[in-house]
Amino acid sequence: MRTILITTLLILSGTTFLPAAVISDTNITLSNDDLFGIGADYALTVIQDEREGPDQGDWTSIWLNVLGDTISFVDTNLDEGSDWYSVSYLEEFSNASILGDSHQVFVRALPSEFESNNLTVGFGDFYLGVNTGNGVVTGNGVVDYRTVYGWVHLRNVEGTLSMIGSAVTYEGTGIIVGTTRVVPEPSSSALICCGLAIAFCRRRSGIR
Image 1 (cartoon, rainbow, N blue to C red):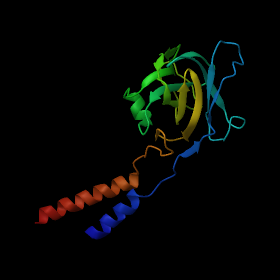
Image 2 (cartoon, rainbow, N blue to C red; image 1 turned 45 degrees about the vertical axis):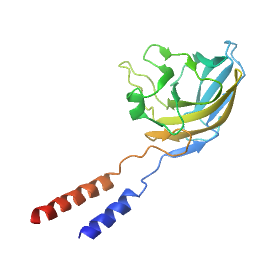
Image 3 (tube, helix red, strand yellow; image 1 turned 90 degrees about the vertical axis):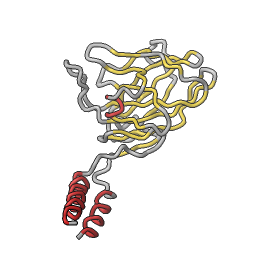
């Protein structure tokens, strides 16, 4: 019986249930066109749904300036918006890490304004994390439908930015920065099996 339970546990714990979609290198873009004449050096655009490419999906942008080793926020779209954070390679970027204030805020939406901070990113490579979705900021400060998590790998060479890569996960709980790995959600089946295995082991201990 114990062998059957352990085998079932291993099978269930290794099973992936409806994995969140991850799209790499297409759904975040960096451009240096100041189309609206707002005095911005660059725009970062993220696609808010799974349709691939900026011509296919619902997109939202922020605009920023670069001065030496520092980036600063200029403006954003007046739509659902997007929240951007300083993140590190192989760091977890998720709802839990955001709620835990694990990342320095670059810019994020608040009910009636935007919180923004200048970021010293240095010269060379750095990462930003983005959290967005098809939703709005409600009156009590809750951002609905913030189920899209992504990262962008950027390079700063003497104040000139270029994009190295990106990945975005949709309808998930988070992503590991610099990879296409999503933050796993506990499987209810695996949790039930864990409980059964623990109960069985305790029962065996009681018999002895």
